[in-house]
Image (tube, rainbow, N blue to C red):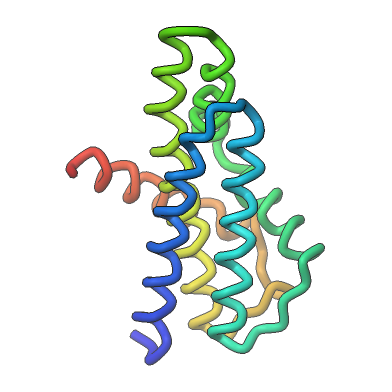
Length: 150
């Protein structure tokens, strides 16, 4: 474990919690925008922590490729939580339960991927979303399992 990793994991956990909170935003799609903003903020903090150059445009495309390229079931899990909020009554309640869990798990998974990548000396320019997708899925499942256990 690198000297920087404990602080980096605190950054990940803090932003995962904030993203989970953003999942409670009652307006569909606005919740997704807020979650993406927290993920971008987290990557900026991690890049700063690891002295990795940060370029907003590169980060947006990396996030889109990594999270957007996730298995359809995970993408559907998050999007359905957001869209459920548009259905009055039970849809709103289900969306308010589903979306925060997805937001926190996804942010945690993204953060863990980049902590590992930066720990190995990587940068945004050397990041390969396709190669990281399996690890993203594993971290996502890990986060979903740990939130179900609590």
